[in-house]
Image (cartoon, rainbow, N blue to C red; front, side, top):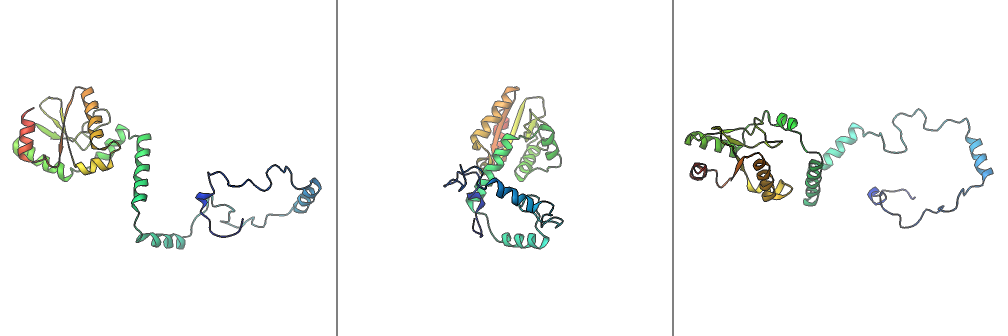
Length: 214
């Protein structure tokens, strides 16, 4: 193959457009020629033996610190395309679907989590209206591996999720409605009612009206 720069993704995992030149030719060098070549090389050391860091392939290779710095600088001001971002999101979603977080791991991840701005607003409203609900979104309470934001503290099986519609729609595999349906089904399985409050309903008037009905 001529020397030069190649896109290796075009060479791997795809059928060749033309068969190899020696396909079907069997042993294309006569036996006596191969024996002479073997004899001439017998006892000789490979030219690259003892040369540290050299490899005929990139497997196990490492960039020098200077090269790493050059590569880093090249990408600093290079924004990702929307297509690239979409591929990253799709890959992460697929990985998380195939490797879901365990309940123990979720607890560790949430242990030091502070309430979001929307959750803090909800906490303030609950305290002001003296409603029987408490924040548990830091991993204090689970139904299977799902951690709601708030639960009733008077013994009633009522949970509350506060959320931003745009974020749920964009970053959940099944979108906003799919996320709500999945959670509703799971919580109902254990006799729990779940109330969903998006950012437009986290205010004193709506919270008082909605939670006052339960």
